Image 1 (cartoon, helix red, strand yellow):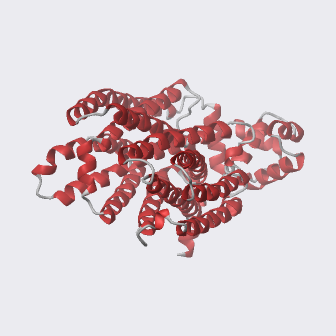
Image 2: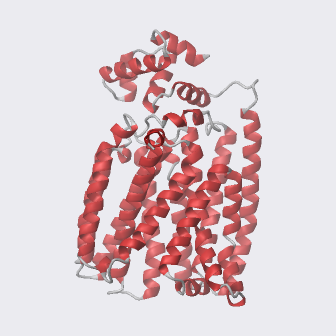
Image 3: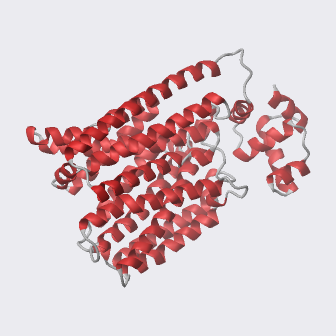
Length: 470
């Protein structure tokens, strides 16, 4: 057991923090949704929960990406994330004591922007420290624990989610998350771009480079695939008959089926990403099929339960696909991009449905029309991956700078910072030059150079540079 934990500590750690953050944010979010019933009708609240709230989450995710791409990477800093956690507490207190629906709506938007930034942080953390072949399970398992935990806490007593008692539970969760964030550097390495599990080092073989034309094309295809999947999912799960049928299902059964679906989707994605994608495409048909077979089936519980199970496939795919790209390309800011695209597209669809209304026949027609470009783009993406993989595997091809860098770091188990410094050593730069470029002190650069020499077993920086260029 001790050996298992030691080998998988980063996986366990990242899975735990994703689950804890999701549990906290879900509890606060659902508390606000229940409180909205004091001011608005059910249709408006439905539009808020998966419309305006999702837009705010998407904005938070995009904000995280933009802040991460700055030189300071402020959105991935411990202090910034701790500050956001501390802001969440007064947000939920004000929500519970809100004197009007307007104040409560403002708190909903603020909370969901913070949720987006939190999510970007956890996705980036996992992409940096969990090997890419386990990211699906990491996310699926964490999301399942968070989803089931939300139901479990909310079921403790009637009215808990809208009372001041929920503040105590949220406070405990915030305190735990803050403590974990404050110590995560010691657990994972020197920074969010640190060293993965020892067992993960073999997985650090260079993936498809996004610096190449083919890599950029595949990234665009993936963005478009998620952008089309999201409205199909939104139309399917927001049509009136689907919502009506699923309301008849026991909440415990809902959470159980959903948790199983998330874990199964994560395992399938990690085993074979293409099959995981195909399963996701196929799963999007089910909400529409459900409305057709519900009254014809004698297995009502199984039919509706399956609808919750298959929801896990899109939830995992939109997150794990981009986390994998971020991990293998070493462009960590891409990790939350898939969820950002999905949230925005889902929100737009939900708000349109709320505004103009879509009947059952129109839902079927729209989903059918959207499936044509989805299947085409998905096929082109898979074909492009296959062709680019053949080029990447060509022994006669000169490796790109990105591939060379990833291969060197993977071979010697370097952290992200050490990887950067090794690249500059190959260019013959001095400690002072490296310190100026990376905005570090010369002592810090010397410390990293010393670690590089220890890990590679090389005698000096010149040997590191020569080996890197080979």
